[in-house]
Image (cartoon, rainbow, N blue to C red; front, side, top):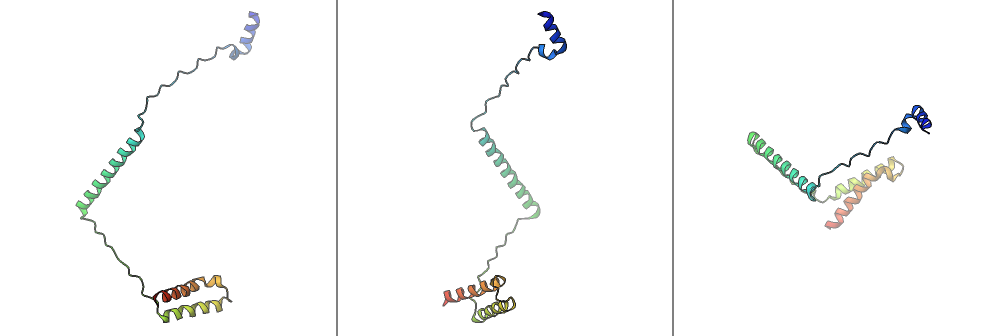
Amino acid sequence: MSLLLYDLEFWFPYIAAAPAPPPAPVQSQPQPAAGGLGSSFTDGMAFGSGNEVGHRVTDAVLGPRVFKHEVQVADPAPSAASCAASMTAFQECLNVNGGDLSKCQFYMNMVCECRRSSTTLA
């Protein structure tokens, strides 16, 4: 029988080789339960503080930032003349485009808005 095993080892050496031992398990260190949240919170505080310090340094060198707020007042109610002009533009568009409403949608919206505005104020 040993002769047969020898022949196998000679012709197929990988069959007779002993299997490699399994790798040792990797031991991980336990993580705290709130480690990710605490780390994120700390990173956010550091970033925010650094950002504010940078703004203060920039203000000290270049002067304070000035913010201007502009208030736009809504347009007054459309007059009868502007409604008539919108209606005329809409009719001209319909005439030019052979009555195709899809090409004159903008003018139709202007006429509808003008009518809504004039009825809410009256």
